[in-house]
Length: 79
Ligand code: SF4
Image 1 (tube, rainbow, N blue to C red):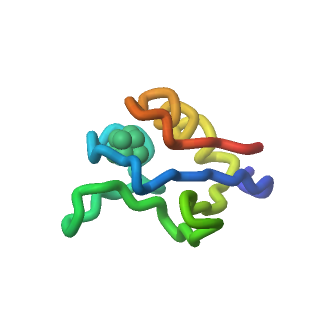
Image 2: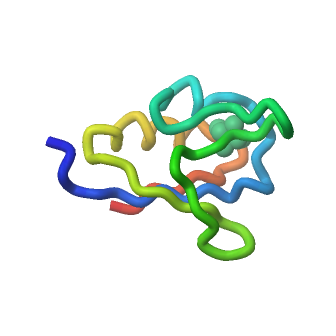
């Protein structure tokens, strides 16, 4: 359990702050009180557009749900 690492990408600048990811994958996402966008736990800038972080395999399903629920489609899950 929890050994395989999965990468999540977040195009944060396009986040509209709907809160779905933070609701569906509470352990990985939180809402930022400053700008109202979501923050991905432990995320680092990958390039000018995307922030990336690794999650555990046991967090995969909830993050897939978050990616599906995101209204602007800016969450990517790479296994
Ligand atoms: S679901 Fe998408 S738009 Fe909504 S807060 Fe999360 S990243 Fe932002």
